Length: 159
Image (cartoon, rainbow, N blue to C red; front, side):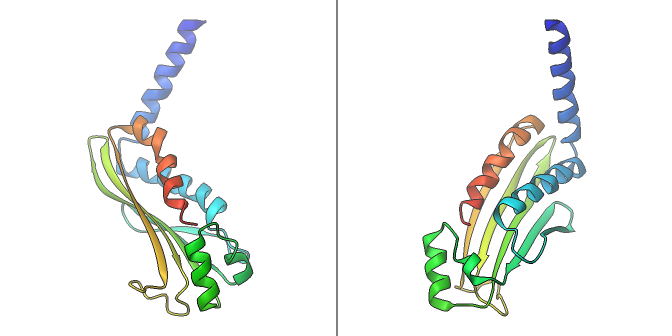
């Protein structure tokens, strides 16, 4: 019985390592994990969040909150204060992951969370936004799988 469990565990870890050994496999895992975080952190009242991948290794989830009362429910006091001061008609939220390096199962991913109240144009370098960037370095597929969500969580503290 113990040998069966040990064998299953070794096979399971090998399967994870294999799946996450390619940029494509890594991307599938990133996209699915992002989807779960979107529902928790940036899902808005009137639209479902779609995760786009405009280029290989880059993923962006974006939503716009049109109900300012909902946007004011943020736990971040700086964002809440800025929204109260500006009183925009909408607030945009973004969660992005960019695979900066990936070689032989090791890699570096930049995770960026953005809250932007500079409606209607949402200029990229506007002072009317707050951004949090986290760098996640991993040594292999298991390291990535075991820690990716923790790093996403750190970025999502912005919201």
